Image 1 (cartoon, one colour):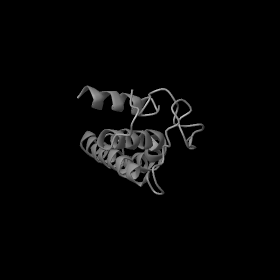
Image 2 (cartoon, rainbow, N blue to C red; image 1 turned 120 degrees about the vertical axis):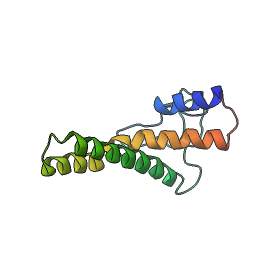
Image 3 (cartoon, rainbow, N blue to C red; image 1 turned 45 degrees about the vertical axis):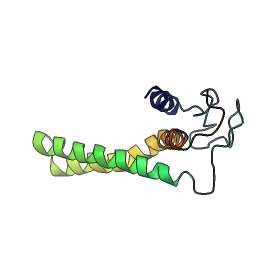
Length: 119
């Protein structure tokens, strides 16, 4: 369990899942191809990060569903305002989660199919 928590911690800090030192991103949406510290190639194969879309979608779906029920039962906003809030969530949240979804996918991959050199 401690290895799993270590990998999740590295994913949330957006650092390399193997060494925990090299940053994953060089910009808001651009990833480094390899780790600056240990040289790990982040994308194992073309389409590798397709799995991160599932993480992003799942978090967005759960968040929008919970928000919908909160807004529905709270009954403090109009239907139009409720819809505006939900549309904002489903548009903005995937953009905001993009980096962490990719990082969590890398951590999950390292947990399930470890690459050598993990510190």
